[in-house]
Amino acid sequence: MIRIGNASGFYGDRFDAVREMLTDGGPEGALDVLTGDYLAELTMLILGRDQLKDPAAGYAKTFLRQMEECLGLAHERGVRIVTNAGGLNPAGLADALRALAAELGLPTRIAHVEGDRLPARDGALTANAYLGGAGIAACLAAGADVVVTGRVTDAALVTGPAQWHFGWGPEAYDELAGAVVAGHVLECGTQATGGNYAFFRGRDVRRPGFPIAELHADGSAVITKHPGTGGFVDTGTVTAQLLYETAGARYPGPDVTARLDTVRLDQEGPDRVRITGVRGEAPPPTLKAGLSRLGGFRNEVVFVLTGLDVEAKAALVRQQVHEALDKNPPAGIRWELARTDHPDAATEEAASALLRLVVRDPDPEKVGRALTGAAVELALASYPGFHVTAPPGKGAPYGVFETAYVPAEDVPHTAVLPDGTRRKVPVPPRTRELEPVPEPDLPPPLPEGPTRRVPLGLVAGARSGDKGGDANVGVWARTDEEWRWLAHALTVERFRALLPETAGLAVTRHVLTHLRALNFTVVGILGEGVASRARFDPQAKALGEWLRSRHADVPVSLLEEQL
Image (tube, rainbow, N blue to C red; front, side):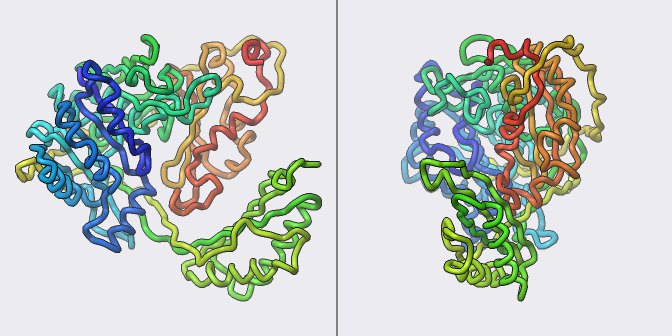
């Protein structure tokens, strides 16, 4: 068995988590490997802008500060560290870590993985292919104590150490697929241990511990956490994370295509969920690549509408702003009225609605000075009670994320070993084009009976997230009876009716029977991706919670314990 923990789910996650993961388990709970995921679509744009100012930048500086505190502790405990904090400059971070180890008097051996960065294309600020875990495995096999990567898949931080530890070959598809599933559960940190969990009520999730995977040679795993840490691990928290930012039954990656429709979860004990049965297939012949570029400039202002006549006030200020901007209109203008106001409210804030205006244009002047004048000059000449949450500033650049696919053989995946030797990582010996999986048979529907109109979330959990401009909403049931109802009741048509924002967009439903889950993908709801901030919730983090809040006719037999 290899015990792999995670101490970061994003750039900005809990700083103390590295120390906690190295110490909270005590000597008997020591990890073999500690991973840290610092990269996301938005992070790559942030690092790209950093590198424009300083070519030596481009990596997650937080990780380096964490190592100032914990590199000696990791050496003392014999824990190897694997992280994608290298971002756009893994060699630079590796050099900084070597200097740190020398300063601390530690014999730490540092290696890094590169080759993910692609030649600039289409005006992209960053262009990176998603690499697999084989380069990480090569670095660990050469004796590395710390392995730094650039853009690898999040799951590669687990598949790499597993390949090294168990000696799996590139065609150990089932074993690799099991590691991918375990890696996907770990990658977002505390989302596997009660964080952002639909059924959080009645649980202590104030400070969840970070997750651990106990991975076995056959690819099976147990998801757990250090004893005594906050949060909890059960089949629900693991299911929720398996549905996060995934789609159908086939989950493709550079190492293997994992079949999510084969995953089986069992509660082995308190805070211990066993994952078994995962099947794998040859990976696709192409690698996914992420491209980010500067899309232009944006600015926003939020008008506060208090008390009576909210709709009329909103109409007035919209007309006034449009007349001011029509002389030189920006390329994009978006209004959104949030009716946060309550009648006969006891506080002014509770009596107020928010009208949000977002403008975009390639010209910073059109979203800066023009918007400032159009909004501020109305201060004494608009609706009664006029004020804004803050005056608009100069505007700021926004990013656009795009997905591309490149042949695996065109990407120079390279492991740079602790002694400086450069080892080219071979492409997979076999590949397989992705094909849709036929929808499985649904369970028999519940017998007809009385229903009650209640929020869907009383009987269904959900977790949602972003992939470029698309979103996914995973919905699952906790019991077989709830699943018998959900599988038939939540069709694509019903999903569209509950979430009117999806009207006119392509929506696909994927059925994952063993997880008692449906996974919906919604194409284009996030515009050009999170960095463009085209939507109120730009990463679709709460799309699933909106769905759970919508009312549906639920069988009374399923509500006896909830009401």
